Image 1 (cartoon, rainbow, N blue to C red):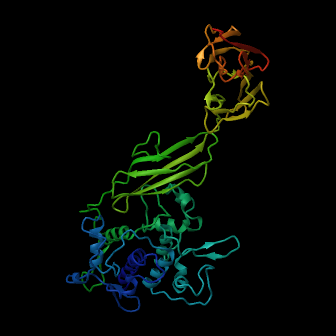
Image 2: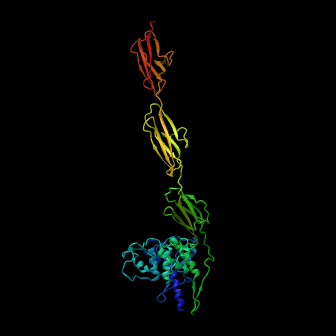
Amino acid sequence: MRKSMKVLLTVMVVLTLLTTSLCSVYAKPRESDDERQSSRWQQQQGQHGQQGQWQQGETDNINIFEDVDKDFWAYQAILDLTKRGILNGYSDKTFKPNANVTRSEFAKMLTKTLNLTSTGNTQTFADVPPSSWEYNAVEAAKNYLTGYQTSNGTLYFYGSRNAVREDMAVALVKALNLTVESDNGQLQQIYTDYNAISPNLRNYVYTAYKDGIMIGSNGMFAPQGNLTRAQAATLLERALQKTEKVTVDDSDSQKVVVGNSNTGSTLDTDATLSNLTVNGTTVSGFAANIFTYNVVLPAGTTAIPTVAATVNDTDKAAATIVQAAGLPGTATVIVTAQDGITQKIYTVNFTVSTVLDTDATLSNLTVNGTTVAGFNPATLAYNVVLPAGTTVVPTVVATVNDTGKATAVITPAASLPGTTIIQVTAQDGTTKKIYTINFTVAALDTDATLSSLTVNGSIIAGFNANTLTYNVVLPMGTTAVPTVAAAVNDTGKATATVIQATGLPGTATVVVTAQDRTTQKVYTINFTVSAS
């Protein structure tokens, strides 16, 4: 009887440890409502104590959780464990089903679960001073916890980090007084995520595996995986279904009834993805039942791609994505089904291509914002004639075809006439193409003719651009000198200077200077006054 009771008590401690470590404090440095309330399920029996069973009639004390309705996937598990007095909610009538548990909170829960007390006065962890709220708990439970040791031997606890599965493996192995076995390389054959297990904890994980305490799923242990309070409730309920303890009589034998935890379960086990993307594009060859993908990135890629995932079982399954830390590298997507147990892990292995592009062509070439006439990526030389009189070297802009890989260096013409050179270097750094634009300036015009010649606003009779002398007889008695006006043929280039007559009779002169500033023509209008 004493031996059977000892086994029972040990199992109950494990269940208590799992429960308390996952459903107590909600990321605050003070005790949660769970911890402040007196335990309804802890009954004192001798020195060790024993977990009490839920009895019919205790339902009046069950909290009504505002954030867990009857349609919530873990509702039945939460209700059942609340009835048993294993779980409680918070004073605001919430359960906080999605809350994680930090390492410091886990230490506090572990201390209360095992009735641990600190026996020394020496600070063990550099980041947990005596003045910190978690000091007593961490010191009391340190033999069941994990820590982080630097190269100089200093220990850190990092209490604000989330408690993870490998931490729980250590605590359970120690709480059960199991003999830690060396994995001797066997763990690597069991779990595909072996490298994610902290080296110093691998023997504990192997021991937990061999003793059936923590097995994992789909060939993975998920050592860094966090558990929510809702997931913990589901896992714990299944554990209770498997190891429900019933006392048959007062003899030396006790009977343990082990049931099928899947019987009657309505929780989904779908842990597959409906989509997996890299930088917004679905991974080539994606299928829900394919778990490993190899993505070759373009040569020269340095930015780590972003992986996103969509679960098949929307609003039930959950996906945790660990992005690649560098290139080459691997991104991991851990999908946990609604049942909180079934997991599938998708991996995306990134490598960078070593084959560099050889494209050294241009996709566009402009002069002062306008594409060069007749541009073609395969045509390397262009001749551009600039308007006569141009003195400013035009601005050339080049756009490469192999965007983000090839580069273009532009050397402007020093003067006019002159040549602008565009050297395009491909991604491989060797392949090059040189485009040239030869600029010339058109000759200056020599047109010094008029398109119009008027006297007092009227075209002179018989006007012709090539006729330079005109005789105009004014009516008898005219004393006012007429006004002569002229318009050049080469508008904007040639200029016309009009010298009006000073008296009557008299002569008006129009001097036209061509654009070349050398060629000139002089038009004369001779005015006389009629005698009769």
